[in-house]
Length: 128
Image (cartoon, rainbow, N blue to C red; front, side):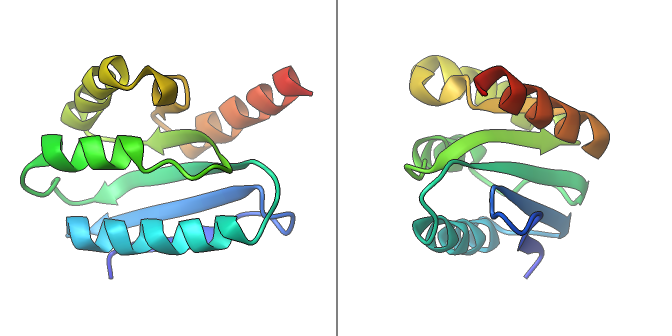
């Protein structure tokens, strides 16, 4: 599988999805299902970083899959930060954010992991 998932911290507040090389929508859905199982085991908000810096090209029918991903939000899901996402994916999620405003504020795009961690840290401080 070319989409790997792991907890970043021992408190289980941050998940890291690492998308590497050639990937399929099936890979992504299987990993998302695993993430939802893990989130079922906690009783707090879980933020996510999706690292696309080493990913291959996006699979076919991205609009259909993007809509499914945008609406597959776990009750414990917090912010999702995409790192190095392709321009087309960013545009797709902007459009989907207009259609599904309940998830629009949860999705951010940045160029580096440092920026992703800084954004999540700032978000946590704003909520605290």
